[in-house]
Image (cartoon, rainbow, N blue to C red):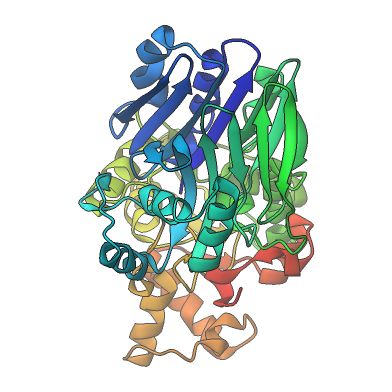
Length: 462
């Protein structure tokens, strides 16, 4: 998971670039970087594992000057600087390449080498750049990239001419063009637009390549209308103020909560959401049920980010344990509906959320999840990498007493096996009851046609 951004202006763009980066901070926890082109290309990359993007880049941005720049919040070091036959450039990427090892071996056989390592592994962004430079132009290279990869990559490139931007060929990850007066921007998310004064110009189409300079926007490669945008953007990943394909994240989450509440016979004393991404789901549930929304758990925002993002399980557990603080006077003796966006591994929810509610004398804990059970690791972005990590797969292994690839009945929410799986997860988490969102209701909450959404992590089909 990464957030990428760029800006170009008729004046110094560094202040806008700095805040564009800051407003993408929720999309990564390991590295933050920018590249600015003024008299020359200047690049700054920092480890932000234990500090915020703004604190690491603030002093750099006070001294940098240039009318164009790009940046990334990412799990790997970006931007990558490239000297090539068609000029020097910097590149940032968002996505994942499933066949990266095969492509790397092919490049090694051709005499290529890699220098930008992340966590002792080949940097995916550098791999992308090596594929692009094999052709005679950036645009031709981007097309070649899309023809070779199994996965999804959106990218922004900065050179002395301006900024090139392209959304991945499937449309899994978004890119949005914005404008204010004499400044253009291209971003993963629109979160920054209201406060920085940008208006949406267009959402890039899958495979579309555009070029931006101080004069404006030019189409370099037409996009495809067939989109498969990641549905998880609305359920968990995206910031509430952002919109994708014109559909706002906060509104979708409220709709998800309303769908969860319909037909639910629980009569709770209050509704709450696991902070922060479960909050809007819970608000929707509370509105539908006409039950009070309260905060038995509050997040200590200044110190801790998203526990889902760190690569290390130890770090994920530490963040999950420390960031949520229980309030016993609100919890004790009450029946609580607790809304969550999803259950991935389930360990943090079990050990650091539900356990805290029981320890503070909750009477009942009814877990309501805004998406269906996750069945497959994402093949299009950096998140879970193996099936065995997923709570639903653990349940299946225990119930079947073996690994099973025929999971069609477990995906069917009307089947006996599905109900047994949910019962197993309920017991494992220690909840009083558990209800997952139905897939069709989640799609309705988003409001886009089903065929325009990537639902791979729930269905195993693109």
